[in-house]
Image 1 (cartoon, rainbow, N blue to C red):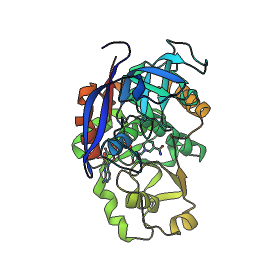
Image 2 (cartoon, helix red, strand yellow):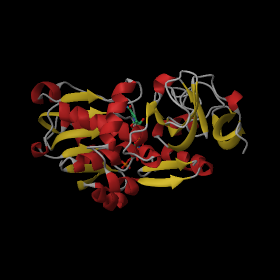
Image 3 (tube, helix red, strand yellow):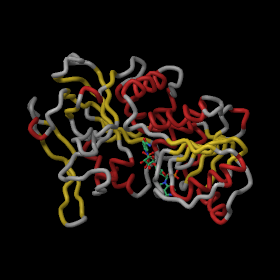
Length: 333
Ligand code: NDP
C-alpha cells in the first residue's frame, strides 16, 4: 500500500433497503477536509457501527459510508498545530463514523476538537477494548456514584451484560466492590460474566413478569441499563428505595410504557448517560481514570476478541443480531 492509499470498510446501498459491506482501497480525496489526519492502528465495533453498516438512517444519512465511531492511532498531519505528527491520540464519538468517514479504515480526518491524547497508562489496543463502550460504562458508574451508590446498598443490576458496555460495566463495578447481578440473554456466557466480577448471572426472562405490574418488589439497589425499551422500566420498578438507574442504551428498543409510582413512592432516579457529545475535556478525564484508578487490567483481555479489518463486516452482522460478546478490536497495526 502506498503512503496515500489506505484500506477501509465501505457500506453501500446495493438495492433499496439492502446494504453491502466490503473492504476497499481509498485515497485522501475520500476523506473530509478536516484539520487532523490520523493513521489508525486500532478501531473497535460498537452497536452503533452495526446500525450504520445496515443502513439505519438515524445514524448515517448518506451512503456509501465508512462506519466506525472509535479510533486510536498516530497523528499524520495537523493543520490546527495542536498535535505533532507521531502523537498517539484517540477519537471516540462526536460525528465520527456517523456522517464523517469513520474508524473502520486505516486513516481518518477529523476536527482537532474531537482528538484527545492517548493516556500514558493505556496501550492503543487496550484503549480500543474500552472505546466508546468503556467510556460509556465508566460514565454510567460515575453517575451512580454521584447519586450516592455504595457497595453496602445492595446488588447492582447490569442489563445487556455480555455486550460491550455491559461487560465493561460488570468489570468496573466488580472492581469497585459492588455485588453485580448481570442480566443476559446468553446464559451460556455465565462463566465469562462471573470471571469479569459478576456476583450472580440472571436470565433476561427474569425481568419479563414485571411487565404487567405498576411497581414490583424491590430487588436491586442500583442499575446500569444498556438495553432500553420495556426492560428499562421493568428495572426501574424493581429498584429499592432511593435507588437509580444509569440508562445509556436501546439494544432492545427506544420506547417504554411508564408510570410515576417508582419515582414518587420510592424516589427512584433515572440517570441519562451520553458519551458521544460529551465535552472533550470530560472525555479525557474519564480516559485518565480508565488508565489509572479504574484500570481493569487483566479483565480487558477476557473482554476482547482481536479481528482484522477484513473480518469487520462479518462481526458487524453478528452485533446487529445482538449476538456479540464483549468487544471486537479491529487491528490495523
Ligand atoms: P452490544 O451489541 O455490544 O451489546 C448489546 C447487548 O444487549 C447484547 O450483547 C445483548 O446482551 C443485549 N441485547 C441485545 N438485543 C437485546 C434485546 N432485544 N433485548 C434485550 N437485550 C438485548 O452493544 P454496545 O454494548 O456497544 O451498546 C449497548 C447499547 O448502548 C446500544 O443500544 C448502544 O447504542 C448504546 N450506547 C449508548 C451510548 C451513549 O453514549 N449513550 C454509547 C455506547 C453505546 P445479553 O445477551 O447479554 O443480554
